[in-house]
Every structure is written in structure tokens, then in C-alpha cells.
Amino acid sequence: MHRSRRFRRLRRSSAAVTAAAALAAALAAAPSPGTGTGTDDGLDRFYGQQVRWGACPQRRVPDGMRCGEITVPLDYADPAKGSIRLALARIPATGGGGPRLGSVLLNYGGPGGPGIENLAADPKSFADLGKRYDLVTFDPRGVGHSEPVSCGGSLELDSSAGDDAASQLAALRLLVRRCELHSGPVLPYIGTVHVARDLDVMRQVLGDPKLNYLGFSYGTRLGAVYAAQFPGKTGRMVLDGVDTLTEPLVEQALVSARGQQRALDGFLGWCARRPGCVYGTNTRTAKEKVNALVARLDARPLVDGGRYVTGRDVVAAVAAALYAPAMWPALADGLRRIERDADPSALTRLGEPAEPADESEADGARRIPADNADAALAAVNCADDPDRGEDKAAPAAVEQEIRGLIGEFRAASKIFGPSQLMTVLSCYGRPAGTDFIRRIDRPAGLPRILLVGTRGDPATPYEWTEETARRLGGSAVVLDNKGDGHTGYTTSACVRDFVNHFLVDGGLPSGTRACPAGQ
Image (cartoon, rainbow, N blue to C red; front, side):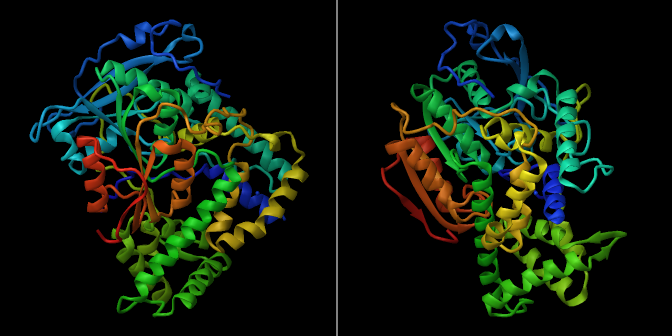
């Protein structure tokens, strides 16, 4: 069954996972933007261009969906450095219920998530918005059909790298060099600050005086950065599954581990209320049994179709299934089979990367590197983070730092904590990123912005919704979704109605509002 990648906060670099695991076993800048509007600094030609809409790169697209390209500066601080092409897609407003409201831009998350592919796969989720708005999405710079970055293959470290800390860190540096070699000039300019500038060009080119925007997961970071740069150009903005703006990568990983554990606890409570749950009705012992399963398979993997299935594979499968409550019955079945029959096949399928419904491309379409999503994920997250003290540390010091964090990560979650520990190294060897995002603090002149946080979200914990609301100040209105899963718009009718009402009618009361679980 096809599972869309939509809204997923993508995993961090597998190379960093490998390096962190190896080190633990051995024991694991973009310039500050201006706020120009295209009236000077050599930007007029970008703001004054027109989109020529035509065929889309995918062979199968919904009726009425058309695609086009625009050009944007490689570097907004120095437009003379050259330009890059960005791919856009649009489904014109279908009409009904009132006059057309212009465009609403959709970002599906990531970083590294392609907009065109996702809108082509599922436009029905936005059908109500599509009556009054043109639905517009895009592949961000470095992603999909917009000058895709690549590391030339898998982001796994070279198998010839040694197991000691010095060898692992040297291999990480070589991986970064490989990414630079295969990505071309866009790589140093791929961060969210630059993408937010691209959003403003899109707004102008589409003919919208203000940006109306619906962003999911990482797309909430992008929306918040746009609002901080262009408060006077921010229209009706919704951020669903709110990402952090301020936490260093290590703190992000700890909060993520706690959020994943909370989501797992929610699943185990749901399972305990169903007949036939393999772990019975005691949720405390159920959690202990899941922990024991992971430890057991790390010590003695099972074999499935000629490959070994380890505890780490189980963790990946469980984490993937927690994204959507609709997948919980399949997760319960997979756990039952592996516990009772030593059959991991149903469980491991849940951890496999979800493929789009149709990956074929029209003739002449630009080929997307197979590692593009992972390469873009690492590049954007690192461009958005200014912390790089570890690059100058001796390997022994890095080992010591990781050793000192192991206990804290395991306390956050016995199974998810160790898999999050690699965040210590996820940007190792890359230049320091911008500190603009971390410095966002109640920008003046913002309109009301709706933030949707889901209590059982395994990827963007509710704490980040509250944190980002504080950073945006009094303009932020929080919708507290009491449900489970990552983001609320497509799973909660209450959230969807609230969001649509705001985007279409502009109605948004101040203060926190709530949507009950299951509604």
C-alpha cells in the first residue's frame, strides 16, 4: 500500500547515524538576510518575471495541474553570482463559495521534501481550499526538480573506514567533500533563510500582495522565517506540526526522543484496549517488552528474505508507524508476528521508505538523484544551525562528549534515545550555518499566525509549538490538537475546519484553542 511521504520530518543523515553508533560502540553560513522587496540591489528582474505554465515533470498529474519554472538569485546578497531555477506547480481555483482569493503556497516538510510530487499524489486533501485559492507548491532550491543536490550515492560511510573515532570523523569529512563535489554551486545557499527569500519572489510572481501559506513540519520553520523577514508581506499563514527555531541539534534530538517515546506510549495504550494485543493490557510491562525486543534483536538478529533484522530496524519501523494512527493496526500486527512467530517481515515493511504513487517522469524531465532527499535534509539542517565547535575538537574529545550524552539520551527513551544520539555529529565537517533563525524574537508588525500542535506528535513535539509561539510573540495563535500522529490537517476534521476557516475567511480568535482527540 502506498504511504505518502507528505509532512514527514525526514530523518537525519544515515552517515551520522553510522558514525555515532561506531563511536559509541568504541566507547557518537548563510549571511543574515535583508528584507528587500525587489526594488533595488539587482533583484528587480527576478521579481518582475512571469511563469510560463506547461506540462509537469511527472507523467501522471491531477486534472488542471500545470507546472513552470522561475529563476532566483543563487545568493540574494550578491545577485551577480548567478541564478538558479525553481520548479513550481499550480492547480487553479475550481470556484464555488465566493470570489477567488489568489494563491496559497503549500510546503510539505522535510527539509528535502518535494512539493510537486506530493501535490500530484494527493490534491484531494486541499479540495476545500482549492475552491477559492490556486493551490501552488514548489520544489525548494536543492530539492527535486529545483537544482537538486547530491552526495553522489549513499550517505553511508565508506565501509573501509576504521572503527576508531579518528577514522570515523575523517570519513565524515570526506563525505562532506563528496557532497560538495556532486551538488554544484547551490549547496552553500540551500538553507531556509534563502528559501524564504525565494518564497517572496514566488509571491510577487504569482501576483499576490501578501503570502498566504500552509506549511507542515519543516515547512513551519520556513514559514516562520519568512514571517520574520517579511512581516509586512505575510498574509494568512498556518504552521502545522511546528518545528523548533531555537534549540541546538543535541537538544532537538533529546526532545525528539522524548516525543517519540510519548507517541509509543500512546500507541501501547491504544493497543492495550484492543483484543489480541500481543503485549496485553498492562502498558508499563508493554513498554518493557518493546525495549526487550529491541535489545534481543540487536544481540541476535532475525533473518528476513536474506537480510538480518536488528533492533535498530525495529526502532525504525516503529518510528515510521507512529507518524499516523491509521498505521497503528499494521504496527500492532507486525509486533504480534515478530513476538509470537519470530517473523519480522510485516514490521520491517513499515520501516521501508514510502515511495510515491508514480515516480515516472515526462520525457525531458530533469533526473533527480536517488540520494537527493537525504542530501538536502543534511544540507538544510546544517545551514540553519550555527554550532560547529566539535569540528575543531580532537577525536578523543568528541568521543568523550558522546560518552557523556549516552545516559541522558537513554533516559529520554531506551529505544529512541540511542538512535537520536547521532545528532552530535550530523553536521560534522560542514561550515557553520546562520544564526538568523535562532535570533527570531517577536518580530514587529506580524499579523495573526495560526500554529497547530498535536499532543501525540512523534516528530515535532508539542513543546516546539509553544516555543515557536513565544518566539513569534502576540501574533501567534495556538490550536492544541489532542490527537496523535504527525500534523493534524489531514487526520483531524476539527483541525482542518479551523485551518480552512482562517485561510478562507480570515477568522482567528486570540489565545489557545483546542481540538479533541479523534475529532
